Amino acid sequence: MCAVGSGPADLQTFEFPTTQPGETIARAVEFFRASAPVAAVGIACFGPIDPNPGSPTFGYITSTPKQDWRNCDFAGAVGRALGVPIAFDTDVNAAALAEFRWGAGRGLGSFIYVTVGSGIGGGAMLDGRLLHGRSHPEMGHVRTPHDRLRDPFPGNCPYHGDCLEGLAAALAVEARWGRPGKLLPDGHAAWDLEAEYLALGIVSWTCTLAPERIILGGGVMEREELLPKIKARVAELLNGYMEPPDLVPPELGRRAGVLGAIAMANDLPR
Image (cartoon, rainbow, N blue to C red; front, side):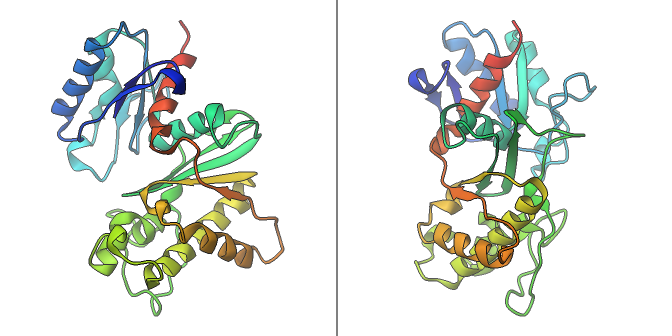
């Protein structure tokens, strides 16, 4: 998805499928050239990426499972084509920034934004700043307790097998049950299992980062019965040792990523 604007009030979007790098980048550049004059571009990208300015590979997509996009100089290609400054970060970090500015993270000192879709990723805001270290967080690839008697599915992460993403992302749900989650009925065993894995991830992030709130977005989380199940299981797992964080849906929905990209671009020095 591409967008222009300064925030939610004047957002104009254009959506097209992600295909090969050359074709996809060309379509994005064409969109911006056809829009009003653009002063800067923010790119909210699937990862892993190099988000660190000054690094020789800043703006690259690195070891992504999407093989055609590995080692792609995404930000560099867009910057050279448009001749404007580029901000570059993960899609989940961007979504976290947008929810902090305009959504469910407003006024909080600490929170995590997690998306549960074809993959699982998370971004953390601490004291009003996105968490970065050597790179960016990869919350979907934490190792997760896996009861193989209850769930013999081996996981489908190409790097780690049964990490959280390999067990609980939408592609894992489809691979385990033989059809997409949106076709599974309410009350299906898939949703108790999904709540279990996501609760285990939330407990790990809660114990390490102690967020006030965790915002849970993405297509899988659109299943209404899932959030109450997750809340109940998180409370059971923490067992009174820590107060569970506030678990809420996003306020910005599918716009969070592009609004975060705009926020990143707005924050670039002029």
